[in-house]
Length: 167
Image (cartoon, rainbow, N blue to C red):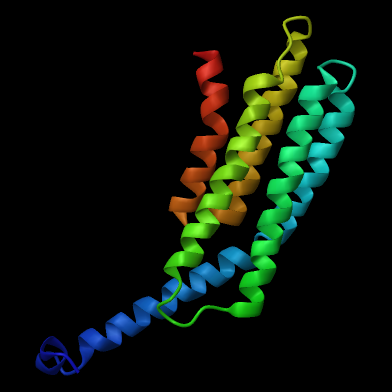
């Protein structure tokens, strides 16, 4: 027991343990809520690519779809790895960092849609892309909203390219 813990009757150590438990549980819930939105996002990308096929360059669509599927697979593999390994209490920082890195890549790949999937010949396409991005932001709020750091990272990176395009 540290000198500080002895002075306060062990309350500091107890509070530190509770904080570790809360961090570990929040990370576990974050990982638990990742598979379904990630898989559905990958399916949506397939539908979006199919719908946009006659309107945009196929190489662009295939490149984006390939990147989205790769990132989705990496995120799902990370979830399965987390479920098998479950980090020890207090060892969750590397898992959170990896989660946020993969989340950032995911968000940037969505942001590419807002930046590149526009066509001056089809102004209604911009409205559909915007509606898709708004829906993406709403879904991310449900799955990431309890950890604002994660949600703000995702929303900022996903919406920044669209915002920059329209400024």
